[in-house]
Amino acid sequence: MTKIQRSSESISNSSSTSSSSSSSSSSSSSSSSSNISSSSSGSSSTSSSIRLVVVVVVVVAVVVVVVVVEVVSTVLVVKVVILVVVVIVVVVVAVVVTVVVVVVVVVVVVVVVVVVALKYNFQA
Image (spheres, helix red, strand yellow):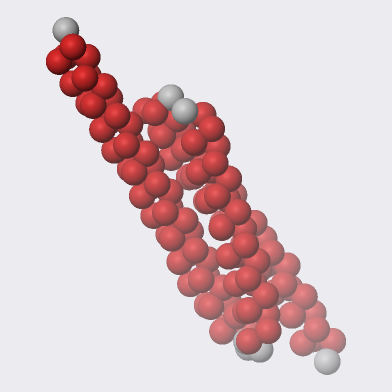
């Protein structure tokens, strides 16, 4: 019984480490994407809100995944495989959401700049 408990504690510790490392890697990738958004749009509040949303989504998703994996699976190998797959999916989804938001912000900024340029061009 102690062996099972120790291996369960080991899995919990490795799950937490894995989750926090994926969360920090997602945070750094969202941070770099947000910096691109910030430099292209000049709006720091937009990039901060994008970064905050992505970080919150990733952290909540990783916590939910770890809890679900702990509750559902009982075999060590199954836990590790499920955890790795789900963490990869969460990171990919977070990066895709960040890229889509950055592209939308850039498109909106370009459209606004073109409209303003055309407006001033017709007035001159």
